[in-house]
Length: 223
Image 1 (tube, helix red, strand yellow):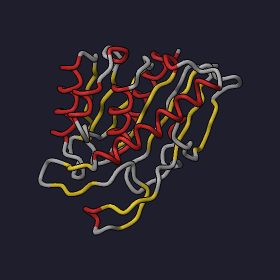
Image 2: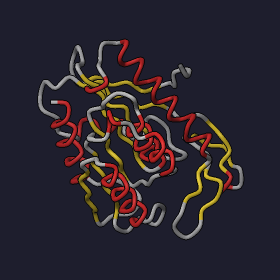
Image 3: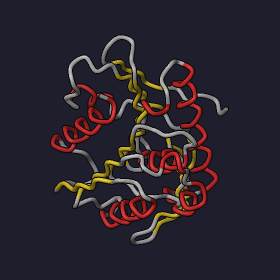
């Protein structure tokens, strides 16, 4: 099992019965989405453990080798496609599997664990969630894309062929074009996963109505 990543941890009520592992974007850290938790509007008394892991530091090729927290190296990108380091993607998937296994050891079964992520974190949430060997509660993919569709095609598991996906994107996103998000949802749907797709008139960020929609999805899947 991979060494556990350091995490910011928040519990919405004592004795959590479910967990959300929420992955930040490139160059951010686990603190980035912590303020979102009280804004989700989760049902009163729903005991959820939120884990916000910190990605490792690594040089990013498309940023002239600048070292930052990242889930994988982006070797280069063109007008639409992002060319990810496959080894880095797979290493991050193993880190997330280790966190899931640790939650299992703490008494939370996989079917009560939801993966969420923004941008690069969402790319890993997609990949780790759809290839996990045990069924998960759901996947939240925000302003993101599939970094390595071939990994899904080769490793997508029957256990997570029906795992619901909530995908959302800013229609004015200059960092991850909305077309990449649309392509990801089509691919996931083709694999058999029920996926909801929403866009908001924003750039590379999240907005309050989107946060409330995420909260409704989490409440439905973990409630």
